[in-house]
Image 1 (cartoon, rainbow, N blue to C red):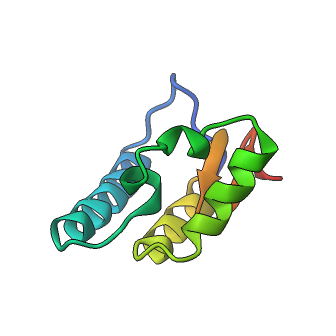
Image 2: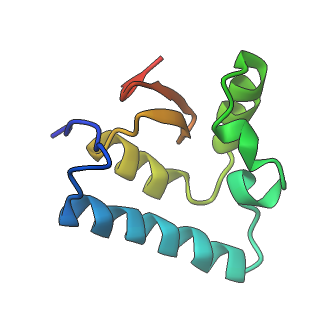
Image 3: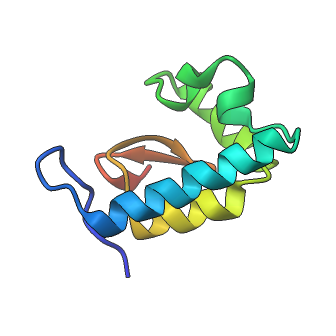
Amino acid sequence: MTRKPQTRRDPDPERTAAANRLQTAIADRLEGGEFIPCVSYGAGDMWISDDPDDQRFAARACLVCPAFTECWRYITAWPELAGVWAGRVMTEGAVR
């Protein structure tokens, strides 16, 4: 089931729990010494950039991420308004 993108005014406890699970998965892998592209490059701005070249780079980098599955589960259940998530470029809550 795909849900609507969250706005700042409608916090959802299930969405918050899902985001926390994703953050925990990323933190656990970082602690284990794994490389997480969106936080390890020092160029996380590419994941929120409006530049198509940055977005393509970020989307390709996601494909080798050890947290890809958790990110994919999160973004398919809880679309974000923007950014690159699990190799997908999100714009206004939809894959572009």
